[in-house]
Image 1 (cartoon, rainbow, N blue to C red):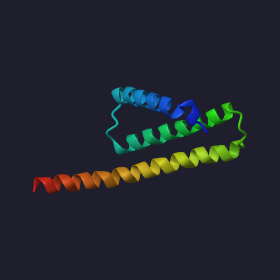
Image 2: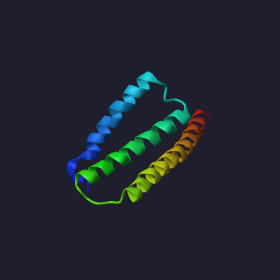
Image 3: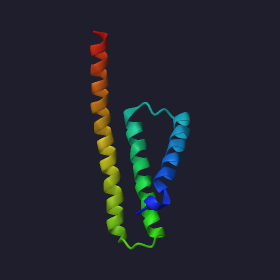
Length: 100
């Protein structure tokens, strides 16, 4: 596994830094921009995990690995988008209850 290399910790720091930089350049307030950003981040994160697997000289056919990378990125983006909507509705509902 890639856990021995601490790759998740390193990638988390890099993603936070990159998102802070991007947020200074463009607004991430729009839902589609945010979802697109999550999609790109999840794709590159999955791709970087594949590079680590290659570096460890473990054999996984490229077709299977790319299918995993693409599908996991799509699933992550779709779930993040759905959860954002659900959480946003719950927060708005809670705010309305507090104001009443």
